[in-house]
Image 1 (spheres, rainbow, N blue to C red):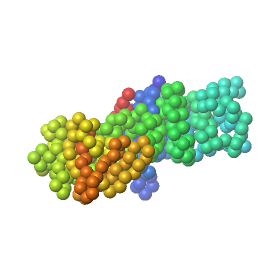
Image 2 (image 1 turned 90 degrees about the vertical axis):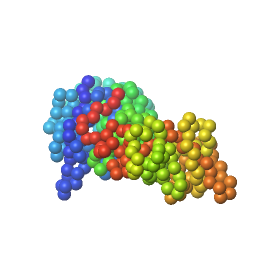
Image 3 (image 1 turned 60 degrees about the vertical axis):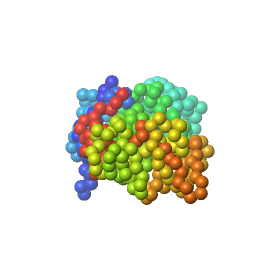
Image 4 (image 1 turned 60 degrees about the horizontal axis):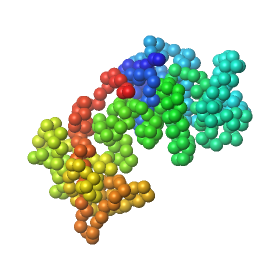
Length: 376
Protein backbone atom coordinates (compact mmCIF):
# COMPACT_ATOMS: atom_id res chain seq x y z
CA UNK A 1 0.00 0.00 0.00
CA UNK A 2 2.00 3.00 -1.30
CA UNK A 3 1.06 6.63 -1.79
CA UNK A 4 1.68 8.27 -5.16
CA UNK A 5 3.56 11.53 -4.52
CA UNK A 6 4.26 14.37 -6.96
CA UNK A 7 6.69 17.05 -5.80
CA UNK A 8 6.97 20.26 -7.85
CA UNK A 9 6.71 18.39 -11.16
CA UNK A 10 7.29 20.57 -14.21
CA UNK A 11 7.36 19.69 -17.90
CA UNK A 12 8.60 22.03 -20.62
CA UNK A 13 8.70 20.86 -24.24
CA UNK A 14 11.03 22.08 -26.98
CA UNK A 15 10.29 25.68 -27.88
CA UNK A 16 9.57 26.64 -24.29
CA UNK A 17 6.02 25.24 -24.21
CA UNK A 18 5.10 24.68 -20.54
CA UNK A 19 2.78 21.67 -20.35
CA UNK A 20 2.80 21.17 -16.55
CA UNK A 21 3.80 23.83 -14.02
CA UNK A 22 4.68 23.12 -10.38
CA UNK A 23 2.39 20.11 -9.84
CA UNK A 24 2.49 18.81 -6.26
CA UNK A 25 0.02 16.25 -4.94
CA UNK A 26 -0.11 13.32 -2.53
CA UNK A 27 -2.48 10.53 -3.62
CA UNK A 28 -3.09 8.15 -0.69
CA UNK A 29 -3.57 4.53 -1.72
CA UNK A 30 -6.16 3.62 -2.81
CA UNK A 31 -7.92 6.51 -4.57
CA UNK A 32 -9.66 7.05 -7.90
CA UNK A 33 -8.23 10.42 -8.93
CA UNK A 34 -9.54 12.17 -12.04
CA UNK A 35 -7.42 14.77 -13.83
CA UNK A 36 -9.97 16.96 -15.58
CA UNK A 37 -9.63 20.06 -17.70
CA UNK A 38 -9.82 21.35 -21.29
CA UNK A 39 -7.62 20.06 -24.09
CA UNK A 40 -4.02 21.21 -23.69
CA UNK A 41 -4.19 21.68 -19.91
CA UNK A 42 -1.40 19.14 -19.25
CA UNK A 43 -3.38 16.21 -17.86
CA UNK A 44 -2.25 13.64 -20.45
CA UNK A 45 1.36 14.86 -20.20
CA UNK A 46 1.17 14.26 -16.45
CA UNK A 47 -0.18 10.76 -17.02
CA UNK A 48 2.60 10.00 -19.49
CA UNK A 49 5.20 11.14 -16.95
CA UNK A 50 3.79 8.67 -14.42
CA UNK A 51 4.01 5.91 -17.03
CA UNK A 52 7.54 6.88 -18.07
CA UNK A 53 6.58 7.92 -21.60
CA UNK A 54 7.72 11.48 -20.80
CA UNK A 55 10.47 12.68 -18.48
CA UNK A 56 9.82 15.57 -16.07
CA UNK A 57 11.89 18.68 -16.70
CA UNK A 58 12.13 19.07 -12.93
CA UNK A 59 10.52 17.67 -9.80
CA UNK A 60 10.03 14.09 -8.65
CA UNK A 61 7.39 11.34 -8.72
CA UNK A 62 7.42 8.69 -5.99
CA UNK A 63 5.36 5.55 -5.43
CA UNK A 64 5.86 4.98 -1.74
CA UNK A 65 9.59 5.14 -1.04
CA UNK A 66 10.48 4.35 -4.65
CA UNK A 67 11.27 7.20 -7.02
CA UNK A 68 9.45 6.47 -10.28
CA UNK A 69 10.78 9.10 -12.66
CA UNK A 70 14.24 7.48 -12.69
CA UNK A 71 12.91 3.95 -13.34
CA UNK A 72 12.44 2.39 -16.78
CA UNK A 73 8.76 2.29 -17.86
CA UNK A 74 8.60 -1.52 -17.90
CA UNK A 75 9.80 -1.67 -14.29
CA UNK A 76 7.31 0.78 -12.79
CA UNK A 77 4.56 -1.79 -12.08
CA UNK A 78 1.97 0.45 -13.74
CA UNK A 79 -0.73 -0.51 -16.28
CA UNK A 80 -2.17 1.99 -18.75
CA UNK A 81 -5.45 1.97 -20.68
CA UNK A 82 -5.24 4.15 -23.78
CA UNK A 83 -7.83 6.07 -25.76
CA UNK A 84 -7.31 3.57 -28.59
CA UNK A 85 -8.15 -0.07 -27.81
CA UNK A 86 -4.83 -1.14 -29.46
CA UNK A 87 -5.88 -4.81 -29.61
CA UNK A 88 -4.00 -7.31 -31.76
CA UNK A 89 -6.48 -8.17 -34.54
CA UNK A 90 -5.05 -11.66 -35.21
CA UNK A 91 -5.30 -12.73 -31.56
CA UNK A 92 -8.32 -13.97 -29.64
CA UNK A 93 -9.63 -12.13 -26.58
CA UNK A 94 -7.82 -14.61 -24.33
CA UNK A 95 -4.56 -14.13 -26.23
CA UNK A 96 -4.89 -10.34 -26.11
CA UNK A 97 -5.52 -10.47 -22.36
CA UNK A 98 -2.52 -12.66 -21.67
CA UNK A 99 -0.01 -11.28 -24.20
CA UNK A 100 1.63 -8.80 -21.83
CA UNK A 101 2.18 -11.54 -19.27
CA UNK A 102 3.51 -13.90 -21.93
CA UNK A 103 6.28 -11.52 -23.02
CA UNK A 104 7.21 -11.12 -19.35
CA UNK A 105 7.65 -14.91 -19.25
CA UNK A 106 4.94 -15.41 -16.63
CA UNK A 107 4.22 -19.13 -16.09
CA UNK A 108 1.39 -20.45 -18.29
CA UNK A 109 -0.75 -21.56 -15.36
CA UNK A 110 -0.50 -18.10 -13.81
CA UNK A 111 -1.44 -16.47 -17.13
CA UNK A 112 -4.50 -18.70 -17.45
CA UNK A 113 -5.58 -17.90 -13.90
CA UNK A 114 -5.26 -14.15 -14.34
CA UNK A 115 -6.99 -14.19 -17.74
CA UNK A 116 -9.83 -16.26 -16.30
CA UNK A 117 -10.23 -13.92 -13.29
CA UNK A 118 -10.15 -10.78 -15.46
CA UNK A 119 -12.66 -12.24 -17.92
CA UNK A 120 -15.03 -13.05 -15.07
CA UNK A 121 -14.68 -9.58 -13.58
CA UNK A 122 -15.45 -7.91 -16.93
CA UNK A 123 -18.06 -10.47 -18.11
CA UNK A 124 -15.90 -11.59 -21.02
CA UNK A 125 -16.11 -15.31 -20.21
CA UNK A 126 -18.13 -16.17 -23.32
CA UNK A 127 -15.96 -14.05 -25.64
CA UNK A 128 -12.50 -15.49 -24.96
CA UNK A 129 -12.30 -17.30 -28.32
CA UNK A 130 -13.42 -14.33 -30.44
CA UNK A 131 -11.20 -11.96 -32.44
CA UNK A 132 -11.47 -8.16 -31.94
CA UNK A 133 -13.34 -7.75 -35.26
CA UNK A 134 -16.17 -9.84 -33.79
CA UNK A 135 -16.62 -7.55 -30.79
CA UNK A 136 -18.63 -4.37 -30.20
CA UNK A 137 -16.93 -1.13 -29.16
CA UNK A 138 -17.86 -1.66 -25.53
CA UNK A 139 -16.56 -5.22 -25.58
CA UNK A 140 -13.26 -4.11 -27.11
CA UNK A 141 -12.87 -1.49 -24.41
CA UNK A 142 -13.50 -4.12 -21.74
CA UNK A 143 -10.76 -6.27 -23.29
CA UNK A 144 -8.42 -3.26 -23.11
CA UNK A 145 -9.34 -2.88 -19.43
CA UNK A 146 -8.80 -6.60 -18.88
CA UNK A 147 -5.34 -6.42 -20.41
CA UNK A 148 -4.44 -3.91 -17.69
CA UNK A 149 -6.13 -5.91 -14.91
CA UNK A 150 -4.16 -9.11 -15.56
CA UNK A 151 -0.97 -7.21 -14.84
CA UNK A 152 -2.17 -6.74 -11.23
CA UNK A 153 -0.30 -3.40 -11.09
CA UNK A 154 0.17 -1.03 -8.19
CA UNK A 155 -1.36 1.86 -10.20
CA UNK A 156 -3.86 1.99 -13.08
CA UNK A 157 -3.65 4.86 -15.60
CA UNK A 158 -6.61 5.71 -17.86
CA UNK A 159 -6.04 8.08 -20.79
CA UNK A 160 -9.55 9.15 -21.93
CA UNK A 161 -10.56 5.51 -22.49
CA UNK A 162 -14.21 6.25 -23.32
CA UNK A 163 -13.85 9.03 -25.90
CA UNK A 164 -14.27 6.64 -28.86
CA UNK A 165 -17.58 5.23 -27.59
CA UNK A 166 -21.11 6.46 -28.27
CA UNK A 167 -23.19 8.06 -25.50
CA UNK A 168 -24.92 4.83 -24.39
CA UNK A 169 -21.69 2.84 -24.21
CA UNK A 170 -19.93 5.67 -22.36
CA UNK A 171 -22.62 5.50 -19.69
CA UNK A 172 -22.23 1.73 -19.38
CA UNK A 173 -18.43 1.86 -19.28
CA UNK A 174 -18.40 4.64 -16.66
CA UNK A 175 -20.27 2.29 -14.36
CA UNK A 176 -17.97 -0.61 -15.31
CA UNK A 177 -14.81 1.34 -14.50
CA UNK A 178 -16.21 2.58 -11.21
CA UNK A 179 -17.30 -0.92 -10.16
CA UNK A 180 -13.90 -2.24 -11.22
CA UNK A 181 -12.13 0.25 -8.95
CA UNK A 182 -14.49 -0.52 -6.05
CA UNK A 183 -13.65 -4.21 -6.44
CA UNK A 184 -9.88 -3.99 -6.98
CA UNK A 185 -9.18 -1.00 -4.68
CA UNK A 186 -6.03 -0.07 -6.58
CA UNK A 187 -4.99 3.56 -6.96
CA UNK A 188 -6.13 4.80 -10.36
CA UNK A 189 -5.41 8.04 -12.24
CA UNK A 190 -8.06 8.83 -14.83
CA UNK A 191 -7.71 11.55 -17.47
CA UNK A 192 -10.73 13.14 -19.15
CA UNK A 193 -12.08 16.44 -20.40
CA UNK A 194 -15.65 15.17 -19.88
CA UNK A 195 -17.00 16.63 -16.66
CA UNK A 196 -19.74 13.97 -16.40
CA UNK A 197 -17.09 11.23 -16.41
CA UNK A 198 -15.08 13.19 -13.87
CA UNK A 199 -17.99 13.72 -11.49
CA UNK A 200 -19.31 10.14 -11.66
CA UNK A 201 -16.05 8.16 -11.65
CA UNK A 202 -13.74 10.08 -9.33
CA UNK A 203 -13.25 10.09 -5.58
CA UNK A 204 -11.00 13.10 -6.07
CA UNK A 205 -10.95 15.70 -8.85
CA UNK A 206 -7.82 17.59 -9.87
CA UNK A 207 -9.09 20.47 -12.00
CA UNK A 208 -6.37 21.77 -14.34
CA UNK A 209 -5.98 24.57 -16.86
CA UNK A 210 -2.88 25.67 -18.80
CA UNK A 211 -0.64 23.28 -16.91
CA UNK A 212 -1.67 24.45 -13.45
CA UNK A 213 -3.90 22.99 -10.74
CA UNK A 214 -6.89 25.17 -9.89
CA UNK A 215 -8.56 22.91 -7.33
CA UNK A 216 -8.24 19.50 -5.68
CA UNK A 217 -11.23 18.05 -3.89
CA UNK A 218 -14.22 15.75 -3.98
CA UNK A 219 -16.56 16.10 -6.97
CA UNK A 220 -19.22 17.63 -4.69
CA UNK A 221 -16.86 20.21 -3.14
CA UNK A 222 -15.44 21.25 -6.53
CA UNK A 223 -18.96 21.70 -7.87
CA UNK A 224 -20.51 23.41 -4.84
CA UNK A 225 -17.45 25.30 -3.57
CA UNK A 226 -15.37 26.15 -6.66
CA UNK A 227 -12.05 27.77 -5.91
CA UNK A 228 -12.31 30.24 -8.77
CA UNK A 229 -14.31 31.26 -11.83
CA UNK A 230 -12.52 28.72 -14.04
CA UNK A 231 -13.59 25.76 -11.91
CA UNK A 232 -17.07 27.24 -11.53
CA UNK A 233 -17.51 27.61 -15.29
CA UNK A 234 -15.84 24.34 -16.30
CA UNK A 235 -17.81 22.03 -14.00
CA UNK A 236 -21.52 21.99 -14.69
CA UNK A 237 -23.69 21.89 -17.78
CA UNK A 238 -25.07 24.45 -18.36
CA UNK A 239 -22.22 26.40 -16.81
CA UNK A 240 -22.57 28.66 -13.80
CA UNK A 241 -24.30 31.99 -14.47
CA UNK A 242 -22.13 35.07 -13.92
CA UNK A 243 -22.71 38.81 -13.69
CA UNK A 244 -20.20 41.53 -12.85
CA UNK A 245 -21.08 44.11 -10.23
CA UNK A 246 -19.98 46.42 -7.44
CA UNK A 247 -20.66 46.11 -3.71
CA UNK A 248 -22.73 49.07 -2.55
CA UNK A 249 -24.45 49.24 0.84
CA UNK A 250 -24.85 45.52 1.42
CA UNK A 251 -26.04 44.75 -2.10
CA UNK A 252 -24.31 44.05 -5.40
CA UNK A 253 -25.48 46.14 -8.32
CA UNK A 254 -25.19 44.07 -11.50
CA UNK A 255 -26.57 46.62 -13.94
CA UNK A 256 -29.88 47.95 -15.27
CA UNK A 257 -31.24 48.45 -11.78
CA UNK A 258 -30.78 44.79 -10.79
CA UNK A 259 -29.42 44.32 -7.28
CA UNK A 260 -28.54 41.15 -5.37
CA UNK A 261 -28.15 41.18 -1.57
CA UNK A 262 -24.82 40.07 -0.13
CA UNK A 263 -25.49 36.95 2.00
CA UNK A 264 -24.90 37.63 5.72
CA UNK A 265 -22.16 34.97 5.85
CA UNK A 266 -20.13 36.83 3.20
CA UNK A 267 -20.68 40.43 4.35
CA UNK A 268 -17.58 40.51 6.58
CA UNK A 269 -15.42 39.32 3.66
CA UNK A 270 -16.44 41.85 0.99
CA UNK A 271 -15.51 45.48 1.21
CA UNK A 272 -17.62 48.41 0.13
CA UNK A 273 -17.02 49.41 -3.48
CA UNK A 274 -15.30 46.14 -4.42
CA UNK A 275 -15.56 44.92 -8.02
CA UNK A 276 -16.88 41.37 -7.91
CA UNK A 277 -18.46 38.68 -10.04
CA UNK A 278 -21.68 37.06 -8.85
CA UNK A 279 -22.32 33.38 -9.66
CA UNK A 280 -25.37 31.11 -9.48
CA UNK A 281 -25.76 27.53 -10.67
CA UNK A 282 -28.70 27.06 -13.09
CA UNK A 283 -30.53 24.86 -10.57
CA UNK A 284 -30.37 27.68 -7.99
CA UNK A 285 -32.72 29.94 -9.98
CA UNK A 286 -36.41 29.27 -9.27
CA UNK A 287 -39.79 30.51 -10.57
CA UNK A 288 -41.23 30.47 -7.05
CA UNK A 289 -39.98 31.38 -3.58
CA UNK A 290 -41.60 28.33 -1.97
CA UNK A 291 -38.65 26.03 -2.74
CA UNK A 292 -36.01 28.49 -1.51
CA UNK A 293 -35.08 29.03 2.15
CA UNK A 294 -33.31 32.35 1.57
CA UNK A 295 -34.65 33.87 -1.67
CA UNK A 296 -33.84 37.11 -3.45
CA UNK A 297 -36.19 38.41 -6.12
CA UNK A 298 -35.07 39.74 -9.50
CA UNK A 299 -37.00 40.04 -12.74
CA UNK A 300 -36.02 38.85 -16.18
CA UNK A 301 -37.35 38.26 -19.66
CA UNK A 302 -37.59 34.76 -21.12
CA UNK A 303 -35.66 34.43 -24.40
CA UNK A 304 -35.73 30.66 -24.94
CA UNK A 305 -37.05 27.42 -23.47
CA UNK A 306 -35.36 24.05 -24.00
CA UNK A 307 -37.61 21.20 -22.80
CA UNK A 308 -35.55 18.09 -22.08
CA UNK A 309 -38.30 15.84 -20.77
CA UNK A 310 -37.06 15.39 -17.22
CA UNK A 311 -36.41 19.13 -16.87
CA UNK A 312 -36.51 22.42 -18.80
CA UNK A 313 -33.71 24.89 -19.46
CA UNK A 314 -34.98 28.48 -19.45
CA UNK A 315 -32.84 31.29 -20.85
CA UNK A 316 -33.41 34.53 -18.92
CA UNK A 317 -32.25 38.04 -19.84
CA UNK A 318 -31.55 40.60 -17.13
CA UNK A 319 -30.21 43.76 -18.72
CA UNK A 320 -27.08 42.75 -20.63
CA UNK A 321 -26.69 39.39 -18.86
CA UNK A 322 -28.30 36.15 -20.04
CA UNK A 323 -28.63 33.39 -17.48
CA UNK A 324 -29.90 29.83 -17.76
CA UNK A 325 -32.20 28.21 -15.19
CA UNK A 326 -32.87 24.49 -14.95
CA UNK A 327 -35.62 22.59 -13.15
CA UNK A 328 -38.90 20.75 -13.42
CA UNK A 329 -41.03 23.85 -12.68
CA UNK A 330 -41.38 26.28 -15.56
CA UNK A 331 -41.13 30.06 -15.53
CA UNK A 332 -44.22 31.91 -16.70
CA UNK A 333 -44.26 35.22 -18.56
CA UNK A 334 -47.32 37.25 -19.50
CA UNK A 335 -46.86 39.54 -22.47
CA UNK A 336 -43.84 41.81 -22.24
CA UNK A 337 -43.77 41.85 -18.44
CA UNK A 338 -40.61 40.35 -16.92
CA UNK A 339 -40.99 37.11 -14.99
CA UNK A 340 -40.03 36.87 -11.31
CA UNK A 341 -36.85 34.89 -10.66
CA UNK A 342 -35.97 33.82 -7.13
CA UNK A 343 -32.25 33.39 -6.46
CA UNK A 344 -31.12 30.99 -3.74
CA UNK A 345 -28.81 33.19 -1.66
CA UNK A 346 -27.60 30.16 0.30
CA UNK A 347 -26.11 28.93 -3.00
CA UNK A 348 -24.74 32.28 -4.14
CA UNK A 349 -21.05 32.64 -5.03
CA UNK A 350 -19.03 35.84 -5.08
CA UNK A 351 -15.67 36.00 -6.87
CA UNK A 352 -13.07 38.78 -6.86
CA UNK A 353 -13.15 40.26 -10.34
CA UNK A 354 -9.38 40.83 -10.56
CA UNK A 355 -8.11 37.38 -9.41
CA UNK A 356 -11.16 35.23 -10.12
CA UNK A 357 -10.86 33.58 -6.68
CA UNK A 358 -14.03 32.83 -4.74
CA UNK A 359 -14.69 34.96 -1.69
CA UNK A 360 -14.30 32.68 1.33
CA UNK A 361 -12.02 30.15 -0.38
CA UNK A 362 -8.76 29.07 1.25
CA UNK A 363 -6.68 31.46 -0.85
CA UNK A 364 -8.57 34.35 -2.39
CA UNK A 365 -5.66 35.84 -4.30
CA UNK A 366 -3.89 33.14 -6.31
CA UNK A 367 -4.38 29.42 -6.99
CA UNK A 368 -2.43 27.23 -4.57
CA UNK A 369 0.52 25.28 -6.00
CA UNK A 370 1.98 23.77 -2.83
CA UNK A 371 1.77 20.07 -2.03
CA UNK A 372 -1.86 19.03 -1.58
CA UNK A 373 -3.14 15.75 -0.20
CA UNK A 374 -6.03 14.24 -2.11
CA UNK A 375 -8.98 14.00 0.31
CA UNK A 376 -10.50 10.77 1.49
